[in-house]
Length: 314
Ligand code: PEP
Ligand code: MG
Image (cartoon, rainbow, N blue to C red):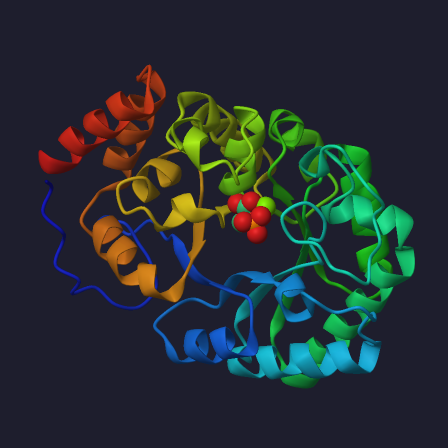
């Protein structure tokens, strides 16, 4: 077993040689926001807004949403807060959005696709987010979940900007979106990779099926290849690419992600200290070596072993 790094580092994330890696919090509730606001982290990298409305049978109004978002944003005046618009459908149904009966909900109407059925819901949410950001001084960034094509990204960006959102992005969690990240980024200011869904869709494994967990592994070389493509697209465009899925919180995988071109990692507050400590002990060059080793491996097990060996000799 590899030794844990001493968690002496604090403040903004960076590699040993000073390459900045933003370490932000994943939040879902006002209570999470309070905890993250008091913690040593660089704002919010993923606010899962649907968590506030699970179980609701009536749609929340602009006023109600504004109040919720204000209660979240007031903990982050002057800090970046990346908000995901409602990611409903599949594993996160919202009763007030009736999506009909689907044979394969994970491949059905979910995330941004829901906005085609309920356009007013998205407009209402964007208006509430802008009002709450204006009232609190939070640096609002808004991203859409489950974007698959550049056209979808363009449509979302146009709508969000028309409602007053300054910085617009998308989650990359569909392989098609990773493959064409370059086209998608033409319309947007940033990307955030959702490795939970990207792993699910890359290996065609339902993330709720525990017995297939070995295929749902974010260390799968195919998943890492897709992340590398997104990182490359970000580098070419000069726009930031982050990861907000579970893999950001794995201290062995985090430097691999940095080596793949990721400049922000968002995770539960409890995980940030270990990731910060790990990055602070590694030069960017070592992160690049780790990324190559993980991609050159044939299996997740081999990838972990190769990266651990680089880590332990660095
Ligand atoms: C993801 O898919 O990686 C992600 C961050 O979103 P969620 O887990 O909420 O689907
Ligand atoms: Mg997701």
